Amino acid sequence: MKNFLYIMAGVAIILLVLYTYIGGFTAPDVKVKTSEEMYVAGQPFIGSVDDEALGKAFQRAAEVLDKNELEGVLGNIYYNDPDKSGDSLRAFIGVIVPDSNVALPAGYTLRTVPGGRKVVHVEVNANVVLSPRKLYAAAFDFAKEEKLKLEEFYVEWFPEDDRGVLEVPVKQQ
Image 1 (tube, rainbow, N blue to C red):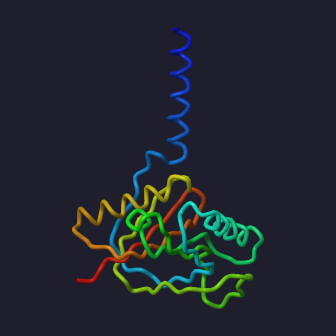
Image 2: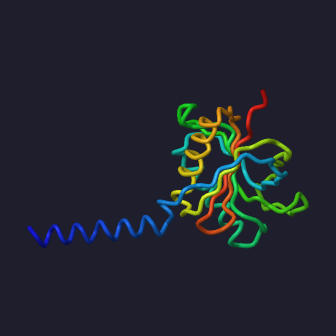
Image 3: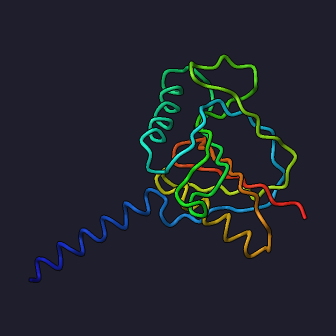
């Protein structure tokens, strides 16, 4: 019995170290700022968050970067919150590119995210598996604390390994 407790304690320590390593305890940095214009090359998606096509869209975006078809970073636009709309997602999945003068891969179109808007800007240093949950929770918590109303329009991107960014426009009163 004593050996079992030592083994369980060892496993727990390893899991805590791993969770810390991937950014599990890292607090997001949240602020209000003015957004900059961005260009997203990608493909639209409408469907369930469990749809196989969504996973394929993410895989295609990673492939576009791996094969140097585009220069940029993984980035997505979400036009609704699936938690509020019964698991239905409207999104644009792709790559944030430096400007609009790019040759697009087959099946990709270009969308412009307008700049000059007041947004809640969130950044976190955490593994891509943990980043989205941390980013969105921080944005919603901040908006609630500051009594801000947010639009249902979310732009997220991952400029580096283990770093995620989210911007959500603040509704104008």
